[in-house]
Image (cartoon, helix red, strand yellow):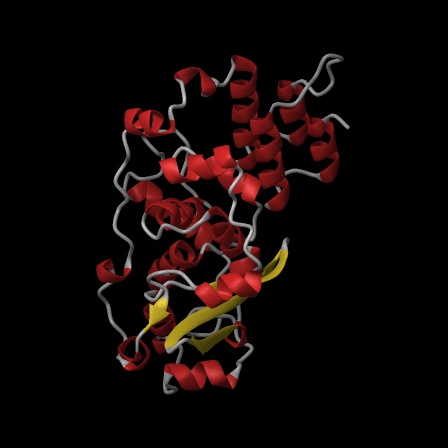
Length: 308
């Protein structure tokens, strides 16, 4: 199980796919290799609550897939190219006996607790498998220089969501928001341009399974001083509005609902959806949508929070 979890974590962090539905639905037949302008790329077709989309994988992903393949006796004898061309219908994330594990989320929680990494010291939020999507987005913006539209396409989300959650990371992203430049590139044009660090070499394709993982991972992004960001954009500090106590309490309640510590009814009571003067803050709206996406909040609950 721990070997599968390792590769599961690395694949999520290098593709931006959602754990759960998208990862569980991934079959070997959904993985393909293609060539463009003399460069090879690894692509996954994932399907979840937001529909099907194609993901261009980072180059290191191929080795994590090879490791999973090497532990499965029924496909270990094939070359990676043969495996991909065979369009097999078996789940990618499975144990050597063919069982598709349903316990990766819980095993990840145990790993985080055992290593002392469960709670983020900066935000106080618990780390979950969904945190790996944030890792992917952060590395893509800071290390790859990926633009907002490309990242939204890769992650299967909206440009607004990317701007809302990650505009603090880089002056470039803030400039795009202020100038309205969101890189609304048509998807086919985006695919033709590609992104740096995503092409795979013949050595990547034909080399044996490797155990070294550090070289394939992006470098830890350097935190940019907020002062430098502010000076470059000439954005005054009063543009950053603090979260009020009511919004803070509402976000806490939604977080507890996500962890199963509050019922939906109790969460709505904390948020105050039954009050006559109720209005929803943008942060609450976005958090509620995330919970609906992951099956933690009902449609009725969402409507109550939106106040419609």
